[in-house]
Image (spheres, rainbow, N blue to C red):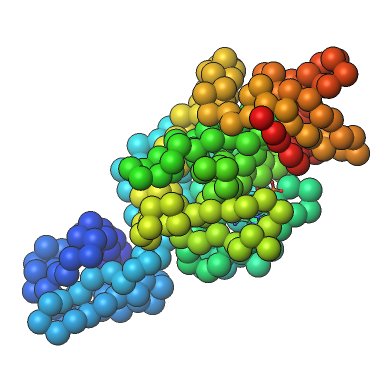
Length: 327
Ligand code: BT5
């Protein structure tokens, strides 16, 4: 085993032990190195940003919150496309931008970009995404789509479903989707999705950006819709590595469905988690305001609304926001 493999192995051992400690002797022997090499490997882990807690007579463990680490996320992930390669940053402007910037690299399709914080995290239509450092998941997945198989509308729904499934933990209420791009728990926003499309090196390139409030959410006065976090729902902190892995796996499945045109599965998935079907809602779409009953979703065309005047309209996800809903 080379030096880097040893460091990865030590990280795995520490991570898998969770809150438990490893004595130095035990850790050295489990990773097959001597004490001096172990000290060097632990220094390297610290250098990579992992906080270690060393307690006399007990040993060493990873301090919480565990820093997001590409190796721990990629390890035996088992996905076809999404997250085959992962990179983690401390701070970036926006993980969506980093993903687009990586699109020219060899084998970039499916790349997952995570960051501990963003300087300019964005939502749709110039809005901001707020997330304190090292608390939540800020994730972007790059998909190179030269054949145009991945429609923006469909991917937005797919990502919402992937998040709703990925955050399913005992004690968390069922994730509901607020069209087009929000995931709610008990009527409060826990995650948002931002799908962006650009042409890079003459290829259609899609980035699915996902922000999940794992351990913190902005106070009500900072957002235009009430927010929540998984921690708030559960009453205890949430480990982000496993959460990222679950979301990547679900996203892999849903992206696979979109790529192979299985839109009916998307529609069914959305219907089963939609909190607004048959309710009277108000939608701002572009400059227009529509009030009516949400009838259906078409994963390629958007929301089908029966307006109060009786006419039916298809509202595209891009540029639309639900601003109010009633019974
Ligand atoms: C979204 O936009 O909900 C999409 C958010 C996508 C964020 C991810 S993070 C990783 C990737 N990199 C990026 O730069 N972005 C993506 P929208 O529907 O426009 O909602 C934005 C609105 O949600 C804001 O105007 C606030 O009112 C509210 N908001 C901001 N931060 C929030 C948070 N952490 N939790 C809940 N609501 C929030």
